[in-house]
Length: 304
Image (cartoon, rainbow, N blue to C red; front, top):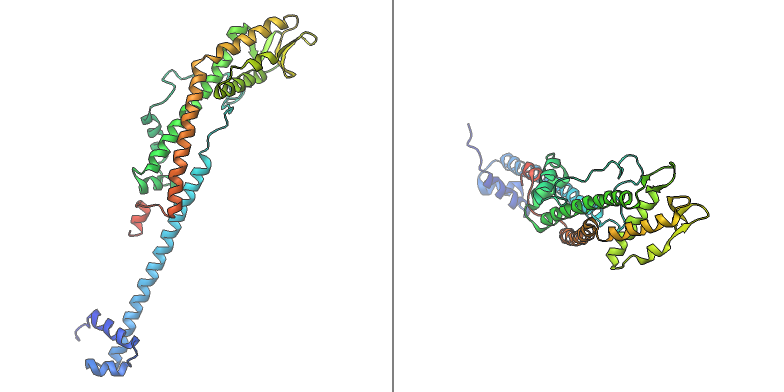
């Protein structure tokens, strides 16, 4: 049985062949049959083609993988925006996701980082683009910023709902009226107008440093129609007691201006704005680089 020809010898034949020497000349130099030289050259070329095909295949797959990760970062950046100052997560009508059925959690309003982290880990157990980004970046500033954003968003979201519920409860307590989302026997407070106006005015007034005097000045006792209005919107139906309930509504507003729930909404909104800015800066740095550094389970499957 003939002795196997070393790969290095075949590679040398190919190099000389590519430099312009003929198969016959190479065969004379190495004392080999010309068919052996030809077969050796063909073997090396075939191996190189296979290797290059594999490299091209892996490069394409890695480029697709990186594109997927970068697109996910763009999606995260687009979706992590600070909500409008007057955003209300609960409905003022007595329906699904309603302020009427919402119960303020008994635990602390601002959840600890571990609570949010556990929820995130539970939701990211499957192989998603988001979970692969976390594998790639590990303890990178981007991941830390993303987790800070999640905590800040949840804090702001919970505090907004708590403020809505506090408004509903305070309206009933101070006016001594039923708060309803539909016409009932007067007197009663209209939840979908009064609750929303109070919520908007309280937040915008606190955020701008105002005292809300303009809102109270524009609350009118409409004796002719038997209700309390704000810019022609009915807030309270109270025939014959319009002025009484106008004053009580103003008192409700003043009391709510000093509520801890309002202070928490403003503070967590500022914290959320800072978290969004920091996160977007971290994402932009990676996008400018054009790749997500590190490795993940997909990279390892591709032999990286």
